[in-house]
Length: 396
Image 1 (tube, rainbow, N blue to C red):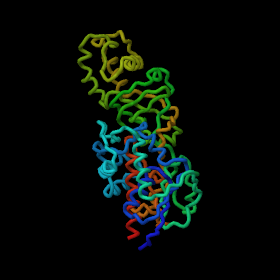
Image 2 (image 1 turned 90 degrees about the horizontal axis):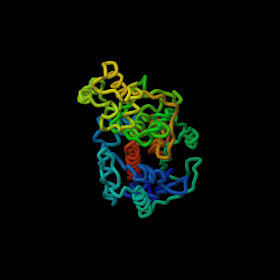
Image 3 (image 1 turned 90 degrees about the vertical axis):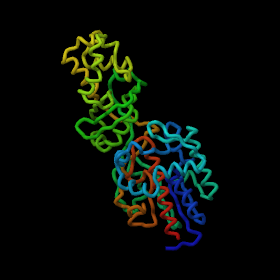
Image 4 (image 1 turned 180 degrees about the vertical axis):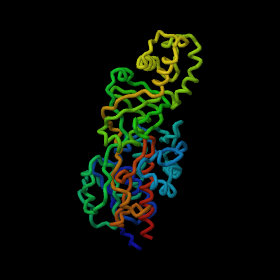
């Protein structure tokens, strides 16, 4: 298939996937006429606040042994697309674009500047330099006419109505619902520990196989932090089905089982010190006091005076502390949506629709979403790049 130099491409949505697609399409096909339409007044608004304003560009994926760990939905597609543009390609791309990167201990990748606006300015600048036309404040009610190709990168929508402009295409929609959210827990004792961070926790949704590891942040409303956000991603559909009423079990001891915890605490049991005066160093004194109280143990008891039943209550509390979830917490930085256009509508890796080969989709508008840690932005970069590559290939 050949197109004249006046080939016109419309990109709906000036988020990460849309802007990245536009820049790369102009690099691959400079003669293309590319227009990006954005509903809001400025492009890349979500990128500007991601990662707490630092922009978690990607992840090294070194701790990911199976891609489903990073992408609960859409991992098979991402596995194929990564062969064409993966995390290492992303890091090279940004470094070449003049954005030096740093890798944190948790394998998250950020700009060395720790400034998300550097990422925004770089992409917007590259769009301007390459001649991409950006139209803001433009609400798209239907696919624009007069274009050879249309790329839909409108991001996630918490309701089907947000995808209504696609209804003429008769695509199947996986029910949209929130992912990556904190949990409401009505527990005043827990709330009193607001601001406490416990590293290396393990959390599980009772009665299911859903579980996650990582730090937990105790808040004035319940729990947040990477472990909770990952669990909410893995269990997004389950939690929605339960109206966000559930029970979670928290292991505060790095996922160790009771036997392993007893062995680790053995020096304490032999010390003869007061329970309230000696505790694992990764737990604060206030947190430790709450846990021992929940276990029904006075802080005046001596470690070496605890009987087997009391020791068992303590280790059980440390490894399977139970809390009742009363709802989810919405936060401006936790707004990933699972669901969207079903992947069964696509022509494999082309990311174009079976029913309309001239219409491509990329990013969160598809039923692909990742856990916290740079994985969602990586999906956007990858899909935006692959769509640009496919369109450029059709024009040659």
